[in-house]
Length: 390
Ligand SMILES: Cc1cc2nc3c(=O)[nH]c(=O)nc-3n(C[C@H](O)[C@H](O)[C@H](O)COP(=O)(O)OP(=O)(O)OC[C@H]3O[C@@H](n4cnc5c(N)ncnc54)[C@H](O)[C@@H]3O)c2cc1C
Image 1 (tube, rainbow, N blue to C red):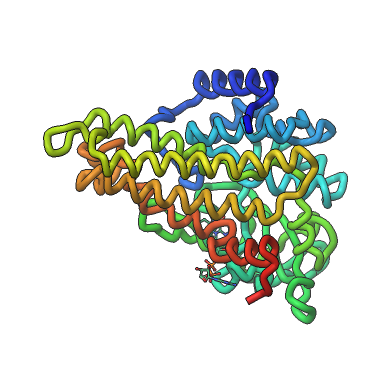
Image 2 (image 1 turned 60 degrees about the horizontal axis):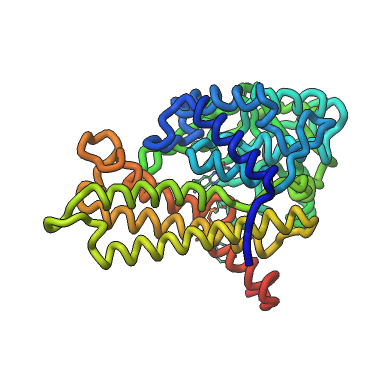
């Protein structure tokens, strides 16, 4: 079997690569940006504005909402090339909130939010997880009680990027505590500067942070309710058919492996280039096969979408394999780099600017965020293999 993109898609890839490499405000080959860190976010914002100016930020959106209706395969190419160069451009506005508003929002909400998202004027954080609701998201307890034109919101949302200074949160809140837990949840959006909202930084072991956001009787205007009240679980689930292949993992891994291989060529251990050590060579080769496998799994998901098929277990396979593969790659890198590989990016002695150390510490989070590996395995077991629920 031969897997090839069309000539038109390849021409688009060339255009994307040329644009990114000429416009990127940071050294993509040596920096790992975290768009949930305020300093990095400034750089990401600059680049988002450039993409927005070209109409590329929301390229996959329908034309009536300011998009260009990019095909799934072209969006895959765009996502692949941006991830390869470490460009974290989507804060959930483009891929989640915008599409949710298109599907379930009022005309007024569409007019207000969609142009602002496509012009990169507002930024978002995701307020789903709570201290007692993560994998079991339907257990959210943050209460929203109607009072006049507002909801009065009380509760807390954790592990989000609110400390980055994003100005809006999209969140799931409980509007009816007396019905089955998937019912009685609403999807609302709120500005982050309202009285009664406090943001507390939670330091993480790799030097970054995530936030605990507390709501104490916060009056959120009812105009922020997206879709029907108490139907938020289903509102959040009816996302548009945008590209969701998870190709970012293999793209990022490709760049890391290339840099690791260069390091092995350029550095010696026991008097000879590391690249001549048969055990290291074999492990690097095995990794290259893993990355290629992950990439093809992602291509399959995008291809299914392009054929108007709905990827289900395939999306879980992609998330599981891709995030676990990335974890193996950082583990391999730390071993290959030796003792110096454990130095953090601030040290002048850190090889590859400490990217493997930083990634090794943070990558476990990739196997947790957006659905843990165990949850993905459950989905593959039940929806993919037809096994009974455990
Ligand atoms: C880096 C990072 C960024 C994040 N960003 C955000 C964000 O922006 N917004 C947001 O809302 N949330 C965010 N999260 C939270 C993330 O969605 C949750 O951490 C995740 O859903 C898991 O929930 P939990 O942490 O409560 O763990 P739990 O759900 O308590 O799980 C604990 C352990 O039990 C296992 N487990 C749970 N249920 C089952 C089951 N049914 N079968 C088998 N095993 C099970 C899990 O796999 C895990 O190993 C982020 C998390 C991380 C790590």
